[in-house]
Length: 180
Image (cartoon, rainbow, N blue to C red):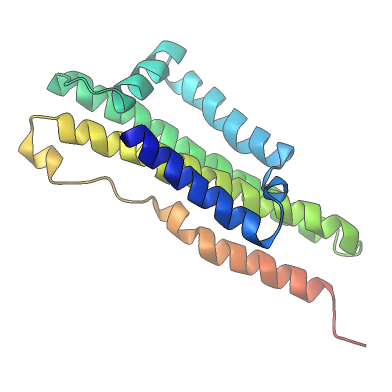
């Protein structure tokens, strides 16, 4: 049942993305390299590849874990969540710097803004839709009642993604200058 619900959620995202235009505009290789590549590589640098895979399997699997294993996997997943948001923030800054560096060329602003916004988009999906629920799932498997009662909330930077997007939008508007 969970798989069907996940697929339905993904389908709703894709439907919403495709209603205004093509879903293909949401696919950006530089943004994916920054967020996906950065998150996975830094995550495996902090924890071993086996440790990351074990934590993801534990977060997706139905098995009850010991308190110690559950706490360890939550820590590994929290690192991945933090890194995803961090890589998204770095990508946002890279995109904003590229936008500001190319203010004289309006045709270069669009791709730079795409990097800025899509890196945060990818980061929020990874951190809040993929990793956050796995962390909560592991907390629910825990036998510690205090741990069960404190769900994992959204990260601060994920909440700040909206204002960052507005700043980027107004930078673009300012780049066009007054109407003539």
